[in-house]
Image (tube, rainbow, N blue to C red; front, side, top):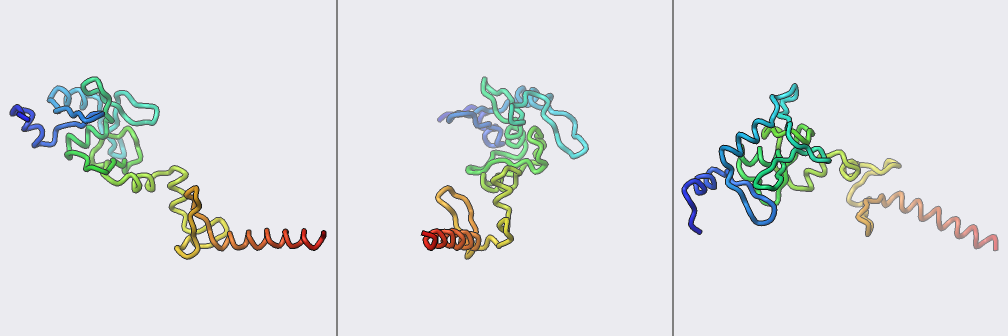
Length: 172
């Protein structure tokens, strides 16, 4: 592939923004100007809030070659370089429309999920079952629905169930 000098410099500088599909876009000074005009001055938390289009999930969207890219991904890519393969960006500030690269960290999807506040993340952080038994390797099993269960509680439930069955047998 024969690259023109501008594209070669942009690639060397990491200023190539991946787009949907297998395409990419060399970030131009015009793109940079259009982007940074939509970023507000830092707030009290140091967040650089995106003032452009925000999607229904709270993330900023930025138009690039008739495609939308996430504003925080664009900011990270042009200031810190490409996002490593297999990693996603985590907002350390928990503000989804923040584009401050210092507030973004490239992590695995699993790590990003566990750091969040979704029900799955809250359950994953639990160290004990509702009855107080530890979720240790020996006391925990995973169901076919990928749910963590306490072996001690399961034994208690099984004993109670079998006692009910025995009581029914003796009353017949």
